[in-house]
Length: 407
Image 1 (cartoon, rainbow, N blue to C red):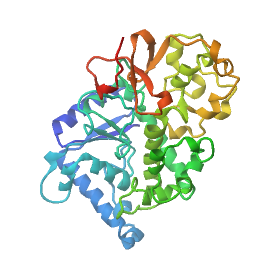
Image 2: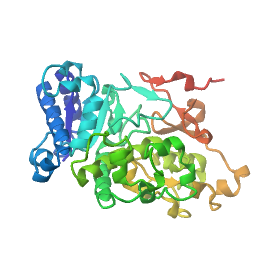
Image 3: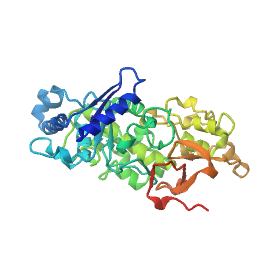
Image 4: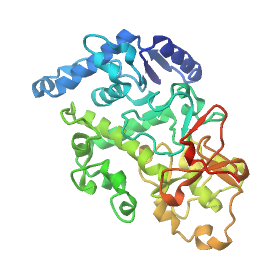
């Protein structure tokens, strides 16, 4: 049973999204979608603030008061939608500070509740917008940042969709399952180094990580030795300086969310350390199990199947598979260990390799004839910065300066 919670200061808008999601999730047995009324939302924020304060008092934590002693509506939500502009919640008393922004609510929800995936909307865009930088918004405590208009898009919920679906989006129900799995894994290795646990701490993988990527993990010590617990408590990208985790489980949940987003938005889009299936077969079409065609290529961009069902022949480099599947929303391989493998035709004989007629479109997660696609330059590793989009009606592509001129 999937449980979805909507938090918005405009009740009519929250109820409208609830209605749309109920229609969208109608085929999922037992799916529940609840929209908090504004007064319930204010009370929920006040409850999180109480937990935040109580966590700073060791005696309260030791006696089980606060978070462990009271039920909170966020605790049972698998997916939470949070509006950014909460000005209408302004007023006197507890919860009034929520009027600052929904980002603060996302922080409180992640650090002081047992909620699942957090989706923040309308913080960085209104209406359907495609980010041509592919950078995302790593500092936000929402696991995914979208516009309100996209909350009901089919591509957020399953592989069955048409039109606009940015490749950076996960499938939300799968993202929830992965978040839970990561938190369980981290709870047993809280004091182990992050990069070693993820298999990114040794050369040549570590050498490819940039300073910008590494400083997210730690600004005060060697990122290679930074543990999950240290990330949460001292990096500035987990808990804020005065805040403390309620317990080890809370610490694991925070790390699972924040480090998961780091992999998804700061590492994977570059496609130079980890490479996913569509970008892999774009470079090496010979890896397709079926002849080069749009249908065979599009099989590689599915989320609701296992790696072995993507139509990619990786039989000669299976040891290059990223060994932490719950840490990414899609299967991936370690690029340095694939790019030099001479069992691949394009590596062994690059001058005689046949280039595909198709390119992968980042805005629809589908392959399209290159002649029908539009090229742009993303803010990623220079060698893989040239990407493609389909251009979908009704979508704003920003910043427009990244679109390459067509001849």
